[in-house]
Structures are given as structure tokens and as C-alpha cells.
Length: 206
Image (tube, rainbow, N blue to C red; front, side, top):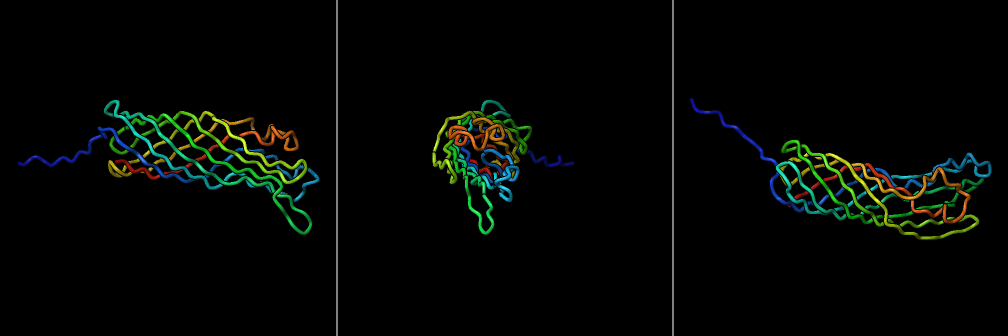
């Protein structure tokens, strides 16, 4: 009798250039105390976090049959944080935070089989954050900082060239916003905040 045909998909076994587009939810972890807790701001609202995206590219070197490591360069943007004061007949934003980051990370990918993999990233992010406060004392200040960043996630490959991934990213910034008096000094109010995001992505390898 003829032997049955066996189909096998080999593990990735070469150096690759990788490009990833991600989107999800997250943003700056600025102070989150409910403004309505302050009697003078009854009826006010807080909008923290929202749509987050990241574009990245990197090169992975084959270390072993299941392990790849290499550098990755990325850009991440995220939603504006808005603190809105509600008056009797109108409302206006009295504090806003805007920001974006550029990061350089070392990435390691471990393949369980030809489809499933887990990965981790560690490195630094250059964070740019602009704070505008429209009530006294009025402040408009842009601050930058180079901060540590970490990411963990898993991926699934449809083919050796195309796959999807899910990751959780964290940039370790200043003191937790909830620990900072929103009516404190300008250094507290404009401190470069933590940034975190949960995202899904499309990966293309060459």
C-alpha cells in the first residue's frame, strides 16, 4: 500500500524583517480623582484614555529553532485626556493632556510551534507630553522624558509572512496621578505620566 502523505509546516528558521500595525485602548495615566468630588466642580467630567495605536518595525535574528531576538523601533500615539468643567449654561475643557512616544526595544520571540508564539520586549521610550490648564494658575507646558518600557504578548501566524498579535505595553512614568493633588504645583501637574495600552496588531514579515 502507498504510504500516506504527511504535510508538515516547519518552524520559522531564518532572520526576518518584521513590520507591525497595532490599535487598541490605553493612554496616559494622569490624575483620575473624580472632579465632582470637589464641591466647586460639581457636574464636571473626566475623559481619560481611549484609542491607542502603534507602528513598529524591527529585525529578528534566529538564535535557535524556536527562539528569535532583535531590535524594534516604534511610534505610539494615544487619545487626549480631558478634564471638563460644567457650568450652568456651558462647559469647557479646563485641563488637557496630549502625548506621543518613540521607543527602541529589545524583542524576544519564542515559538511553541509553527503557529503560536509568545514574546516580550524591554527598552526605553522617549515620551513627549503637553499639559494645558485653563484655570488659574494657567499653565501650558511641554515636557519630555526617556523612560523604561516593557511589553508582553502572544501571536498567531496564518502563514510564515502574515500573523496577528495581542500585547500589553507599559511605560513607567511619574507618580501615579491619583497621588498628585490636582491643585498642586506645576511640576506635579505636568509630570510625564505612566502610559499603558492593550492592543491587537497585524504583523507582516519579509
